[in-house]
Length: 160
Length: 295
Image (cartoon, rainbow over all chains, first blue to last red; front, side, top):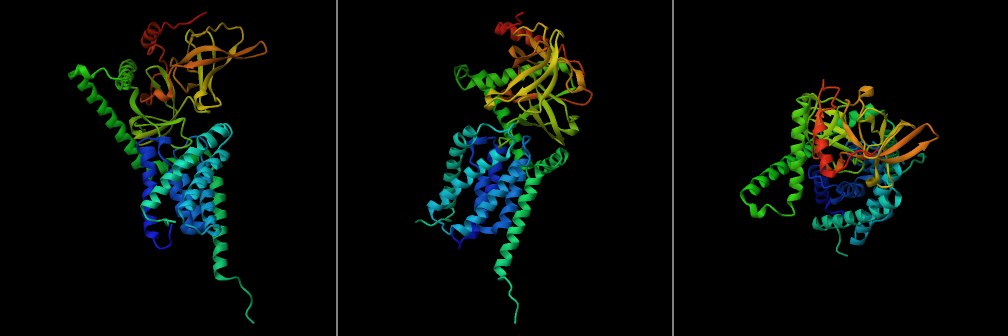
């Protein structure tokens, strides 16, 4: 996520939003498709500041919530907080190395699943071990790998 | 002397944090909006931002349909390639469509055939979309049925598309009775530790009522939500007893939500009694499986 090429990053983010819904809703792939919306939000959050990141998170979350009969609003809160978290990391970590970007995607996606589990009502969620650990950990790894692939493809990370 | 003021960069930062806090509060407030407002937001987003993606899913569902029909034609032409392991899904879909066709003929035009679409996003496990909507005569609360019985109910209706919940949704309730009309109760969803363990329970039946395993439970029509006579499931065993006045029974659902690809959706002025619509198919099913009531 080098500072000199924000244009490539914006192209990537604008592509990720429709791609996420094409894969999840259009093709009906469900969990087989990576969470590109969270990747897009995490990338945006590093660039737009805390206020903008929270707003983008809220909008992304509302769109996901509109496909949810169970616990409407859970995705809105989760994505907003993830946006804020992503923007805060800009103050804490300046790095744009491969290791940092991978860890950032991994932690961001895992935190998204954890928060979503916490915000959902007790009657709607699955057991913690299943939803956050058994399903959440591979999903976070999957998202981090895909995210790394995408930013590498767009030349947005340093080689070392 | 010029008074001390914070640096402009710091002021901007404080504005950002205040704005972010406001957005977090708004996002938290979304969960507490009235259900009608939440539905309005969801419908607006579905009709605008998500419309192309939902349309894409409809296109793919149609393409899958056409593809399966092509496969059926090829099977007729080439008997050597007809027996393959991959055809079991097509045969199953064909059986479903034949069942729906037979059921559709018996029910008449008051139920419309529709394809079931699943969003596949987090939290949408118990919901589905059907490709019929308001202008087709579908209204909120309309029952959704298949060749084996009740799948669920329509919750929101838009032009050309409607959103429904299946029986795995925590809000699902159906006033029900044994097919012989001897015992009445409420069928509700009981969440398991895992989604695969979700079950149906017939609740509130009289303690002394004889209810044997394998007996068919159908909608009773009481309350006016579902028409009378739609099969829901078969008695599997006693779930719980309260004192000596009430028993609950586990049900084996007739229609598994995962197998629903094509369904029938009720339109306005659909008949209130459907007791005879499933008789033939259920009798045939009993003959196939050797399953019947045990008293």
